[in-house]
Each structure stands twice: as structure tokens, then as C-alpha cells.
Length: 490
Image 1 (spheres, rainbow, N blue to C red):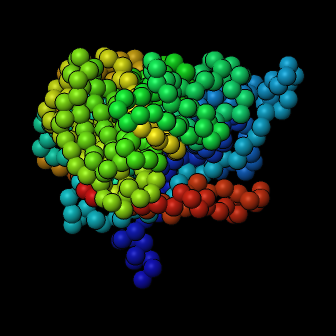
Image 2 (cartoon, rainbow, N blue to C red; image 1 turned 45 degrees about the horizontal axis):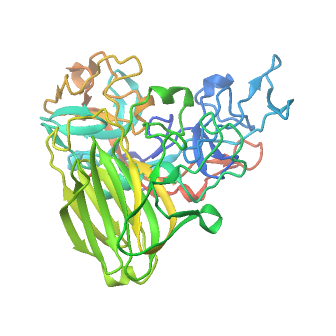
């Protein structure tokens, strides 16, 4: 019965590459930032070490020859240099010392439901395993983006079907937020010129005569003590912190300057509000600014600002009383042409429209982010995040399938799939030759045929295994990575 179950129902699949990072990881390093302590993953490229793709390195290795960059504080780890005898070293205090060797973790191991698509149609955002149409011997894992009969375009990082934006289900969206800055992690040695090429400085700054104290609780909290009438602002300076480019800490930082700016952003914090106070955030997209506010009386409001800075109320609601009696989580996001305001378990959403230009047309304007307050406040766990950004052109700016000017229409039994790590994913956007299918049927470039589906990924059961000792059988999973893999509708 176990054999039948494995053959017909379930399959174990090891993630081979980083094309689905940071949702699912191939072989990788687990990095703890040497300055702020933020933990992130970084790709292990086996070819750079003379190791076969299928090999499982038995020893620790330094990250080289590239230097990973912290996605929160922007610190670049010391770059290892390889000597003529194959050893790696770094320069510290003017001296060459051996480079720090790190454990190489195996790719995540997942469960795949094999027969599900024989009975149910694939849904958009499902994570699917399929045979590569251009090389059917190899299984790929990607996210299903386009369905049969649809015309697909990738515009400014978003997915448009038949001219309308496709919004991610809530659980999928939660998986795809990526850190731009986390204020809980403060650099230990900010004077070193290793943060995006300069010394570190708090990226949030008071605007004008604002009275925010940005050094409270060891600089991990922002406090405001003012009257309840005036608004005090702090603005994120992307010249001091990480900018809004669609970069991945998992990838080679050499690619970062070529990445486009992501304008779908989210501010998060935990405000403690005294009487007659309010906390909020302001995010601009395409040159239009929006504000989300929570007041101490429970009122939740979303505003659009006129060019002159006047507030125009566009959505309002109220939070649950149980959320007011504690330090609940506040979030304000501009994502998938929606404005989303959350406080605790309460949520207010404004639909900006689904058409391609509904949110604005001036896509070249860099977004701006501010945190707002009035009265007496303390904010903790302050963070800034960006949405996933699907690239519609590669580094050489060659046109790919499904761009704004080159939409792609799918026929019966044809699907379009993309990796979450868009800059380093070979997927439907990239394939330039027709694909094969069963019965010698030919599909045009960029298509995943239905009969090449292997199954649906649904659970990470063995995340990033590593060796306790050198013996090859002593692999154990990293327990904090076990999780469901979300897709389709919530």
C-alpha cells in the first residue's frame, strides 16, 4: 500500500535550484549578517566550487567569490579571495586570514500531489512541478501564472490577464513580501563603509520640525510626544538604506544595479497609542501619495493626497475593540493596485481599479515612504517590505514573452509558469524554442502543456537538510522551514 501511495498519490521532490527562492530554496548558505544579525539565505552555485549539481558537499565552504548583501541593513560580508592553492581568505585589519567556512544546506525537500490535476484544473498561483517542455527529461518547479484561453502581460512586475491585474491570494501574498528594512536589527559597527558602499545611517529621518525620537529602546523603537493636532513625519531615505529595487539577498549582488524599482510596498509596525493619538503611513505610487491611519478611538481611514497635499477620504472602517487594548500589528500596503490597511485582525481595502493604467501612468517616479503620527506614540517592530516583481525583460533588455508590448495568448491545455526568483529563473518568459508534448505535439515557445504536469507542490517536509558530521547519511532537516506551500485561492 505504501508503494501504491508513492507511485500514484505522492512524490518527494528535492528543489534543485534557487529559481523559486525565497519561497523554496535549492542548495544554499544560511547567513547571519555580520553587522545587524538579520538572518537570510544565499544561493550555493556548485559549479563555482567545482562540484557537480547533484553532489552534496560534505564540508563547510566560504561564500565565494562573491559577497552576499544583507537585505535589511545593506551590509556586504567580507569578500573571500581564492589563493593559487584553492583556499579562501579575507583581509582583516590589513592581514590575510582564512575566510569563514559556512555549512552548505541541501535544497528543500517537498511533497508533491501527483494526481491532483487529473481531477482538478490548475489554479493561478499554484506551485507546480512539470517536465521542462524544451528538455522533458528534467522536472521543473515554478508558479502557475497563466491559464488556457488567457492573454497574458507582465507590466511593472504585476500579472495582467486580458488587460486586468491579477491579485495574489492573501496567503500567497504573505509568502512573497520581501524585506527592504527591519528596524529590529541594528548594525553593531555602523561606521564601517560596508553598507551599500558607505557607513550606516538610520534610513528613517524626521521631516521638517517633526519630533520623533528615533533612538528609543536602543534605537529599535520610534517615539513621539506631541499634541494631537499636528502630523509628525519621518521619511525613509533610500540613499542611506536599501533602495526599492527588486533585488534578492539570495542572488549575486552584482546584478542589483540592473534591477528595476518595485513600487508595491508595505509599512509594518506595532504602535502603542495613548489617548487622542493616531499612527499612520504614507506610500506613493506613480507619483500619487496614499495614507493609511489608525486612531486611538478605533477609526481606520485611507486617504489619497491631491497634488497640493490635501487629504481625500477614499475608504474607512473601524477596528475591533480587542485590537485596541494591546500593541497590535499595523500594516499599510500598496499592492496589486489595492490599498490595504490592517490593524490587528481588522482590515480595510480600497480597490484602485483593475485596468492596466488604473493606478497611474507615470511609472518612472521612484516611490516614497513615510511613517506618520500625532499625539503620544511608541512604534516597535518597524519594517518596510516590497512585493515580488516579475521581470518582463532580461538583463540585456531583450523582449520576452508576455511583456506589455508583446502579449501572449494561451490555447487549450497551455499554461504559463514563472519562478518566484524572477531574475534567475529559466521559465516561460525565457524559452525561445517550441516545446514538446506527448504524441509528438509541438507547442509554441513559453508554453507548459497540461500533459507535462507532474503535480502540485503542497508541503515542505524536509527544509534545507545539513550534516551533523561528515558521514553522508547524517542529514537532518532545519525545523523552522517546515511549511505549507500556498497557491490558488485562499
